[in-house]
Image (cartoon, rainbow, N blue to C red; front, side, top):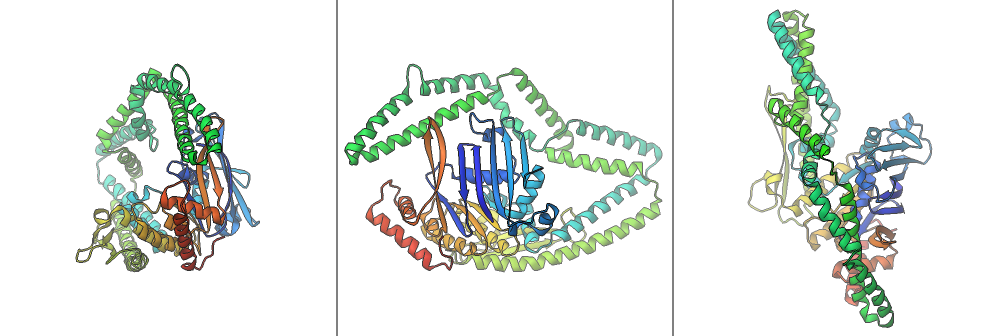
Length: 560
């Protein structure tokens, strides 16, 4: 369980300290207030990749620290790092140059360590996870996780690698010395060409994103700087004029309360313009106008293009090619085994691989039946009239891949009379949200991950379904600590602890503030969410209280 979170100079958060308890922790607030930044901060703390743009403007470094309950730490990790108390601390820093430093109980650790820790402690469901659920490899991984087949899959993968190595070596001993030498020369040349490029994961995407900005850097700088100057100073001080008007309206509202909505609307406009002003400043300062930077990016992209033409079609295929070349070179350099011995070893390896593959298939088939039934049970009560869900596992004898002999596909139908079809082809956004929550609920009951984070699980759903989702989340919070960002009052009503996120001005700069709401303040916030008004009507307040009362009656877990 995450007990405390402290954030300093992270994005638009200057300083924030939050304490959490068990159960369902809900975050609400206006669109753009900064709710998802809190989720980003937790992810950064636990090893997710970050860039220097997350350092607050004007700060030297960002820092996120957290205190977790030791009961949630895997015993092996606790023993390996001498954790004996009731809680342990994690801290991570990011400087303006993009470098990070991590600490566990005050001792330096790597980002990989924090990432492994995060895998054991927190399961994130971000807004982009709907898309990943459509990928066959993700569905296969979820099935293995549910069936606790990770060890079996790893053993199969190891056997697959051994069999591939034997095949390479057997092929090599069948060659003449002249042919072997020719191939060695070719493979070494190809491997050197790939290795010399020093390909970094995600680099191509970063360069492709940077290229149009570098190409048009001078024009972008001129346009953004001019816009910034028009907002901040000069001959057309639009923002300063609005700020003066705001001061007059503040005085006006003190004399006449009916003008309060006008003042608040102008305050929001000033805040939005301040956000734009700061964003423009950061944007213009972050532009690289050095022609050498453009030349370097072009040169690098051309290098990648050449490699992909030879070994692609993608850079990931090029990296796979490098691994294959290493195995081929190793086989050719160490082909002293007799062909008969290698054939016998290969036959034995293939027999072992087939047995492991068949055992893995049997495990997956059994797990698929249970997962199908469990997910269907979870989503049936989430507003579907006639829903069906099934996990299909198909295998082809003798067809071996690095992940097994199986092809896994999640099948779904939400309409009576329609056949099951792949989830990616049939589910709408709202249906995908419900299927994802059903999967998370089932998986949460099948593993020991103590914290679940849901960033807008209500995507694409209406009020009735949101009510059902809230009830499901509340039930799940009986055994897990949940963090949920939502725009739906029907979900917020189930909050065990309700946090309101808002963006304000401090010294002319936008800052995020998070407040834990007392019960009556929670009623006001839910009423606002229902009606979209700053000051709720009596009818809105009544509706909010009814939602909370009904939520309390429909869950055994009382709000804190």
